[in-house]
Image 1 (tube, one colour):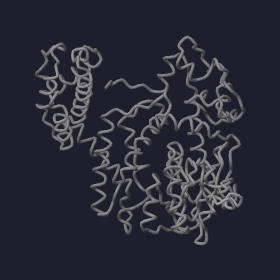
Image 2 (spheres, one colour):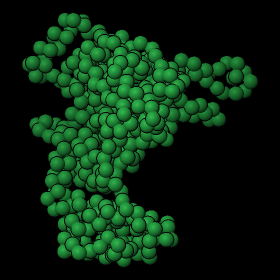
Image 3 (cartoon, helix red, strand yellow):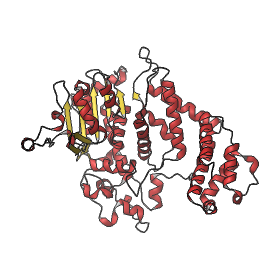
Image 4 (cartoon, helix red, strand yellow):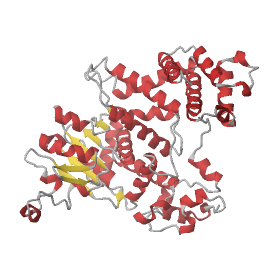
Length: 491
């Protein structure tokens, strides 16, 4: 595993391209419809060093390029400009919906990662107001909105039965205009829906399929925002809740200055969202989502094994701490797996193609229910507070004890042993300069007494011996060490 880290800025500059930061004045020039010509697409510029035109010489064309492009030109998007524009919208909404910065950020992460978000609060806390602001950031995406009630049936969401098909003995729905065709979904008063309706939504929200006996239809749903004034728990609602990777409780605003800002905003808007005429085409979100999900074969965001390992340790410690307050606290394997999408999205928003340990600091946005206090009476500690405490304590402990270096060594050694296991010619593997330099430097850091060791003397036996002699001060590193020794005992 290489230690080399590259940002989007570095990646572009290596190919002679430039990065343009957008300010509010610049944003006003965005919005016109344009395309790159085939020979100047962003992807081809990245792939072809011979074509090193610096588009910053004409900023107007930079800004116009990404707006309102049709699906056919999706491979021509400029990633840094899309990201800057997305961040501008997040900031714009945060200025108009007061004291909701983290929830707004959480909602946009849900959209970037193709997940769903549940917003809980008492009545009159502007949940619908916020949802309208967020969804109206985009053009080119169908929106389905429904206010749930006990009297609704699945037909209210999936369309009525097709009478002509019914006469022929086939049960099919007329899905035109239904949730199945929508990219963005707003489910208001979510828990007022019956269990029958909630159960029918399970496959649409997770597998993106409408399943009704022999009738199976692919759903276009990308992200749903559900809002509720209360939460009811049973077997059905627990399964539905797990489909919402992101959750937040919207708190009351008691800060005097924030209340003043709300008054000032209301005097201008009269409670109606102010929509920007500079919307982002939703194809741009799909493009970023494909990169985040590693579906783009040319651009992928790497997660080093060390980050994976530390992510799991921090999550396990967080769950252990939360169970001191709630013995039934649980993070499903489905949600754990989706945390990787979040940290890739966080790296991309920070203009990097590689995830770093610092990205784990923001993981509370996906892992925790925001504004959920473990001590409801005193409101002295929230899930977010507990997570950030665990994150800081864990990294401090690992840094003080040299645990990060030990983890990097063990995981690099494992990578080499994996290659040796696949390649019978082990000497060829060891002759790869990058691998050899990397592991050699780590061995010298952890075992300074081996200063006279030659790179050429590194063998599978030496690697196993080094792993065996490692004396971790952290239990999770001991588990990693024992697992590697067991995995490669026959090599």
